[in-house]
Length: 435
Ligand code: SAM
Image (cartoon, rainbow, N blue to C red; front, side, top):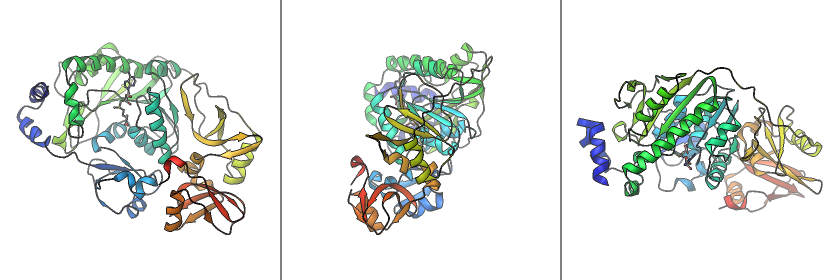
């Protein structure tokens, strides 16, 4: 197995192969993405108490030294997301314009959706899809922790293409792949390594590429990415895709400091990006394409539901007038942009606001965590460090405040909420997040 992998890499890398082989013996490089949608880069730095160093490739990515990043305060506050440096490149290459409709076809656990939402900066709509339902729930919790709002779906790419045909301005297809680029992190990848598996994946990726094309409108952009080195899953798939569809053109990207695509037939390989330990990252392949089609489909939007109790709550607590409200499986959801209609596979249309039981409205944690709503909350209590640690443990706090719902923040960063009653702030931090 190892021999097959190394033999293939030798043909790709030529004189660089020996260096590459040595680099594979080293530890993977650890990086975090800064969620500047929640706080400025400078503010995030002040809440990090471990060693970090900015990367040259993406100015929102830092190298870090810590053995348990998930237990840090910056992680709990949703300020950082552990993401490999080259894995941030697909979204950077796609760079969707503000206000656009973007679809992330294979989104879990969520890294590239997080990158895309940081670029969209609370404008437009991201449809973040993951076909595996369990993984879609992980995606949901990651986006919620970072306070980012997307339309989250769990559909096969076939169904996704039917639901949103000809509607997207931008599509990211970060395809399932043989994962050779992650070998330093997970050497067990080589256990199932076979040409048969690579060819099977290549066929699946080629089918998914056709679905990506279905989703795009005329003039739309597509990024195809994998975290593998196999030519069958990368260059060969791109060339076959371009040959199958006359209206698709391969574009150059402006990213430097990495290798370009492998030479393959008449493919313009210099337009493709290839990252590996030779570029001081793990493995990633990125291709950017533009689509020309006849006509677009008019987008039909989801039907809104209004409810006086919810509207009153939003008005009294946020003072927000213009928003879209949807009722889905007994919960109300809010979005700052209208959402395209969908017939199945929806997990979350925007920000979960809350639910009504026996004529009483109960707000949700997500509402208080959403970065886009942070400036609107009227009742806010900024906690001391000691109070924040108690809140995280699920304890009640005591303060001389009037009754009602409060957004709780630490250093002005949203944590969650509390219901004040006679001076007691009842803890509403979700049980699964407490520690
Ligand atoms: N983009 C994600 C991120 O940045 O966190 C990583 C995506 S991972 C490379 C590929 C995803 O494709 C996995 O979540 C996997 O569940 C999904 N997948 C696997 N087989 C699939 C299929 N047949 N159709 C659609 N998605 C599939």
